Length: 371
Ligand SMILES: Cc1cc2nc3c(=O)[nH]c(=O)nc-3n(C[C@H](O)[C@H](O)[C@H](O)COP(=O)(O)OP(=O)(O)OC[C@H]3O[C@@H](n4cnc5c(N)ncnc54)[C@H](O)[C@@H]3O)c2cc1C
Image (cartoon, rainbow, N blue to C red):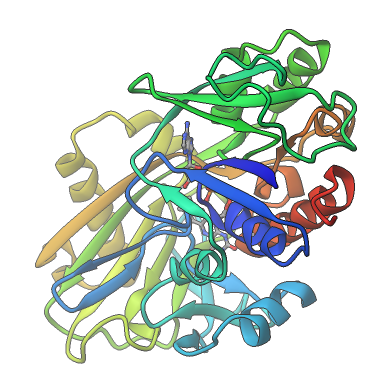
């Protein structure tokens, strides 16, 4: 039995867990997730009869393995394509046709969180929500300090076969021991975990330094609901010169099953600079400013006064770069694996999923999980 601990229940973690479950050897997977929901930055909320994806907007069909995963491996019931195009606007607010991207823009009628829900549903993983991990502890497997001494896993192909991992959450509860540990939080949060780790090894410092260097963009998102329909020839507007305070406006009513007829819901993402400047300002003020900008961009005065509104600050929204490979590989030899879009080096949901699939396979090959 190989005991696997996973910090974070994002798309990459779900894909890795699902892959590990397919290995012939026995695994015991424990997932510790700080929030109430699954799927991390691919996030969905429901209010009244409206469903809205307020993090990632959709998953693209840019990766063959992910396409196979979504259309064949997982139940594709409720998988919907956003077929309306994406138009553009510039810093002056001039809207232009075009910039339609190739391929599918998929979500589910019930929202993008279905991806992690369906992946985890294929596993026997135990998922503990609202459990924020604060510290990682590496210890000698023979005496691991938890009363579990001697309960060793089969992770015999790692460099330090006797070591085990424990995790400590914000309430002081200790989790583990684990033979293999997966870290899925965005790079800055993973770096914090590594900095506070009780793991006395050069590999830990090298990894923390490398992870710390991955830059992330911030997005402050407003959600505006209107009790009327908006007729527009596009699904979304994207700012191409990156010089407008708004980066993106998406119309959730273009996603089948998301918005009842006769209503509209806009997801408005501010650009990085605006989001950083206004991150801690009162939410109502931020929403008001973004509603005004939206009304100006879409040329409709009614949009200044939404029926109801919501918001989410994404401090760590999109990685701008990947992480150096060597420190990752050194840590993997000790049974610690990082995974996510920032490991893939692409700030996209399909990249996170692909990375999770690959990490799951690599653990199978390197740790003896494959028997
Ligand atoms: C506003 C926004 C818009 C986006 N738009 C798109 C888009 O249109 N298309 C696209 O392809 N991608 C988009 N993305 C990017 C996409 O959401 C990500 O690439 C993808 O979801 C990353 O998945 P992940 O598994 O790497 O990490 P995450 O989804 O970040 O998962 C990490 C998990 O770890 C948890 N966690 C963090 N710290 C701890 C801790 N200490 N203890 C326990 N759990 C912890 C988090 O709660 C989270 O559930 C967007 C992202 C944002 C924020």
